[in-house]
Length: 281
Ligand SMILES: O=C(O)CCC(=O)C(=O)O
Ligand SMILES: [Fe+2]
Image: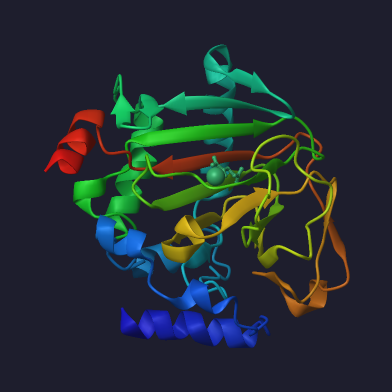
């Protein structure tokens, strides 16, 4: 495992990823982590094998708790998942620029209420994340939020996922790439409303390219201290500041797919009763 992580770090060097360090607060272990006993992630060999034989691209970003596994699924699996998302349209909630489908239950400030079993096609993803060591069996993902972005120009305003979730998130991208921005919170920064059309240089500390079929995993400071969001742009301008990109693509822009991106946000939510119990005692 150590060798693997070392390999990932070497890849980071190979790819000339920016080495600026983020705000020092990002490096410090968060009190929230300790409170939730977040174990380090161990992504095993299988997770780093590209399904199509290419470079899996696991790396550690400047905020040390962000990782991307490229080609986490193959194209056939992607097509199956896209079709399953389309079949779930009946349960979709329409928002500006995107619709969402929630599976697993209702997330409340106390934890997961009205818990329902994940459908088999989502449970398979959850099981794979546990098998790969991304989640411990005690925190098997039990909730999936699907964001179906209506057009390439759709995004999501910078936000934090909040305290109801166990603080590690895995996001699987389907159908299109996008760049996710991690923002340092700024006093008075709005965390609701429309997403912007460009990242704010004032607040962005880290930008990460998410190709279709990639899995983004973040926890620690990236989860608790920073906001994440996706700009509302039809094409993402790529330069050396965007992680998970090859140097030869710097200076180009990558168009998002006309059909819009779909993301599956896979998390563990402690049951409402368990959480209330934990707080009591
Ligand atoms: O579409 C994405 O990748 C972001 C989704 C997200 O941040 C969320 O569901 O909380
Ligand atoms: Fe989020």
